[in-house]
Length: 557
Picture 1 (cartoon, rainbow, N blue to C red):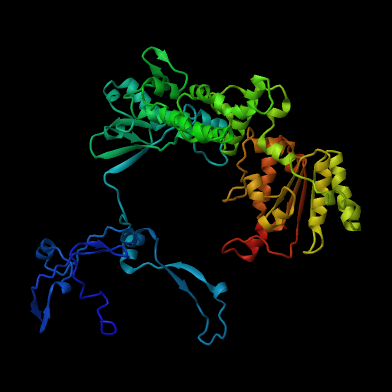
Picture 2: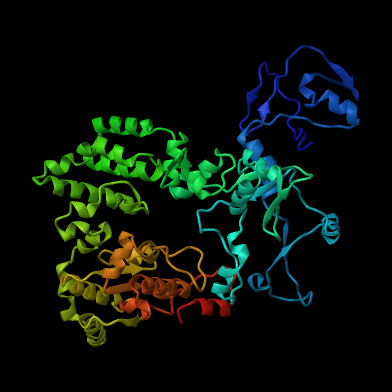
């Protein structure tokens, strides 16, 4: 009882029908049937009955509450204790009981609390959990694309010469099906139920006991051929090789996708056709091209060329009315627009069965990527063009040195250090305006979004260079050489990076390695002029739970 009331809300109200409560638990039906019983000198009715199961009470002879939980909140309550992780405790060790001051941050210990039963269970190395039946993970890889592990200092040529490199579960599955006629009746996912994988000998042997379940590694339609290989392995019994999967009857298909299509394993593209047919009635051509690119990336149509042939006249309708007369030029503009949408989604037009852009392009400008066109379209304020005439002595010295490297097309790394309010941004804008006015591509980036918004055409460094979230000393930025961003970075001559000291040095080193790889130049930042700026007296990189030494090691100093 709490303040004279039951904390479990008894007596409950009478209710004719069970309904859902606000906290996720159902409020059960309690009929007012007039039946009462006397317990401990009190008259009780159905409002006081706790939910129960007669069978459980009779079998275990103890007090058991039983309640059916059907709401999301109730399910979350039940499962959060399983997935929340182990128990933790905050510990403070004091050298004396009379310590006047406690620095909680300095003395904080992130400790784990283990109860006595759990400690004994772990000491005796008993199993904490188990799965029955066991689930066997079956690798999925294209020809000569299997995962190979080796030590850091091993000779890679020797690793390739080892026999185990070419023996994986999938390849040995093919070999077993080739040598054993009985094995040909099983799918790849069914194979572990009848054969056991010997990890030492790298071979499948007949299973004599035990029960397991085989699970093929997951794949997505975006992965292309790997997805269609998985589709074939889930439907074709006893293949003897990759070529056997590609062979349908007497015809050898060129791709796994074609083989899946001939076998009737792929659904037809009617849903894609219906989607575009409906969109034609109320979408403008620009939106249609974007929808077409979205379907290519996320819906993986089996016959892209047929889809293109059916709707191409709707896709370039606006170009036909814009004054362009040449049909090839109209087709080129349409393909370029679709290619821009595909690049923004991380894909390339060459990955799909579309007409080649170079077949129709008469002008080299049409082959420019969207990123290059956007960067060349950045407006140049007149005040910034005239700013280099109003620089002070130190700013003029820096301006002349940087522009000299750009004029000579020689790489250079500069750092502009100064407290806030010393007009570093004024210098950046003057350099950017001068360089861009000459038709040279210059990228303006900053660590923070506020600082990037001050620079014309500014972007955050994470957005511009695709810097990974998890960084280490050998990280690379996720930029493909064939992408529009990769083409932009190769054409760039100047990179301005404000608030650079706020970044971990691993991020700047990752950009350095990426530019060297994209350009094919081993000079710092691929031989480009890079201007870093900021103030080391401001906030350094924030590294969670790091010591002073670790913070200094992670900074640009």
